[in-house]
Image 1 (tube, rainbow over the protein chains, first blue to last red):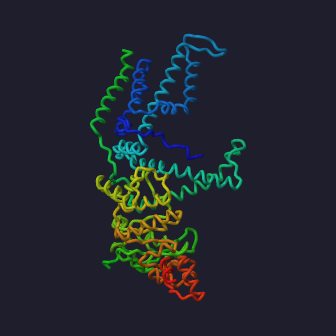
Image 2 (image 1 turned 135 degrees about the vertical axis):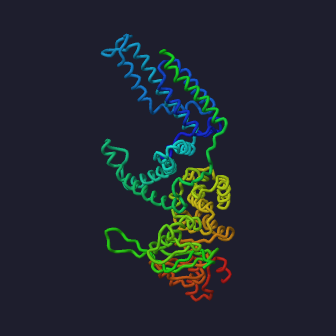
Length: 268
Length: 277
């Protein structure tokens, strides 16, 4: 039952987008997010929408995978939408009981909702087209200049890798412990919230104890395999920037630069 | 001294638990010399000190008294600790808890990556190690989708990729099903006979000791029996007194002898018994 949970949402493929260097993709996403917050009118959204559609097209990720990422956040999106509709002052369009809907509110609501939708689809495109491993590699490499000011880039990446490695193992174990406790009459499915939470104790205690034991054994095994931190460490697959990576990031920088500049052009 | 891979001189190891005066002597005055290219099996039931012994052999633990030499390097020498671990690789009991990466080949590469070997050379070593343990076709798989025996073979490959001269296996088959055990046993045999690695195999399954060059039996931190598998298992009663079993075939031969059937006492395999009968 728990095995159905997939980690990340990587959609394997061998397209131009998939092959891009993870560092480049992370940089592009950062520019993408930044530019979203500089947008003040609807027109630049057309460009953003075009960018997202083009990426989906190039990466051959089915569109429903992208939309699936929106589902858990629908609640937040609707709240944002409603709050903006009802609480923005301006020209009254119509009244709904004690609530008034204004023209500005309506456009503001749609504007904010769109911003959230673009934000989520854009970032989920990153995780859809980049495997967790190359994502961690990319983050490690991008953060490594910050090592000098004390940010432990390698350690962070290592923690992410180990977490990714052990999520399925721990899920399997949870499943096993749950079944073992159910066989002894534990009840995980009925009662109110407080009772249910209490009933989770016999699941969590052994799970935690085992997790600590695993951590201990893993540490010894890593030491036996000569692990001594990130220094002097080489990699099986070194990240290398290719021409197309540089080209892509340059074009994207110009593109998002233009979108950011629209904010100032409007007001000059 | 030259011809010894691992040499333990008068080694003692004590576990001291905090807040208690009682100290547990896990290893008591042990002298072992493992020859290069030897296939040594260490037997003993739970708590006999076998795992502690294994950890002493590559510097994961340091002896309370005495010295351990790996290829003439003392494990107490802090500058040599990484050289020692490159020389004596170690495979542990639980295959799940010794894998680091989310893809088989990345995990095999973990050791050589730590050694600071260039990428191209790592690629070569990884492919070679996976070929030796016959896991090449799984190199892009996620570890949690493999069977226990396969995981343990990947763990062995991870050690092989570091190119150690000696491989210490600490109960590598204890958590596996019979099929997984057979896979590991044949891999170990291959490592010793074809790859010429020195093997120290710690186990409590008697059947696995049959192929060894030499067997040591441990009891309460001490070595109580030593010899070829044939010498050890012919002493059926002594082995049983130590809480261990002898291989089934040997036991059958022993019982038959007791019943007055005249067959030799040193029988280890089914073929031998068939022949004798």
